[in-house]
Length: 403
Image 1: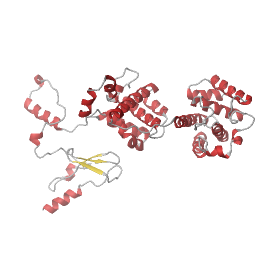
Image 2: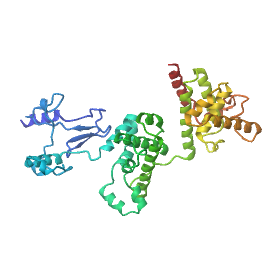
Image 3: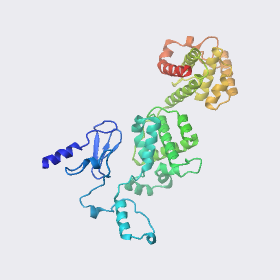
Image 4: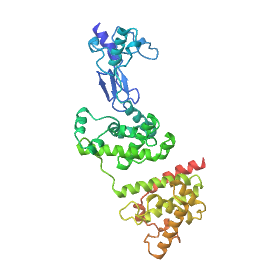
């Protein structure tokens, strides 16, 4: 009889995750749950005894709900959880209510549901890999300090105590227009801020915030405020020795990332206004122009020109080379919120300075021939944007344009 019981128990034992099929599981007996360390899914334990009615307890046809059955349930009842508030004058059967109150207090609650909300948004907007990479920042931003850490925080000066405060509280308590209009929108703001901060710190690649803002109805200043709060808290933890900061990107890497992103935005737009042949010619001409300017290195010739303006002027110059400049300045200006007159005047000034020899640009703005012809093999090997990267973008955009 005992062997039969053990066999029934083994039949119900969880061996792999229902979501990702991983076998990296962690059993948490005090909660009656099994956690998947790979994807984070929580499984309710379904271990039953031989005399239980498994068909009625588990599966789609179940008509009972699993409850925690501690050994000394009566003594432990009502030991945890929040206490329900009520007006004693409105309760007719107080004895029964006290029993229900104890049952409610003995239930297992998620004390920080907002953490899961942020995690869900990161996974849905940026993917599961991003969530796994940045999960520690979510926990740091949306969970309070431990009791021991909180005691230490209260002994610090005003500035440090404020920095160690939970970023989620600071973000969600800002004035209207800075915080979101709902808990869900606040969660999206924090998710976007974490992902954007990770891109700047070099933890992972940068994401384009525009799709998130349009989908959630949020604005840049909301993301920027959240970023500041999270980074300030992170730095405060580092000062206390409670966390470590990842190595920061140097100035050249940050500028390279900004130029790559600006190129992506620009050619997203151009793919909707030019045919495939024109698109590819402008694409490679712009790449060659930026390579001649040595952008992405410490010897960049246009280091004093802001990244978006540099990409705008370089693209406009490439369009001019092929006689496609009509209306192009307006299209490019709309991408970054610049002015078409500003792009044209900056382009004309660079052409004049290049021709006079005042600006040593390796021929990037010498309009007598294409930059692709000027670019030497050594420049190709050290170009900011590798051919295969922009070639892939080119193929994708061309396909979208034709379809």
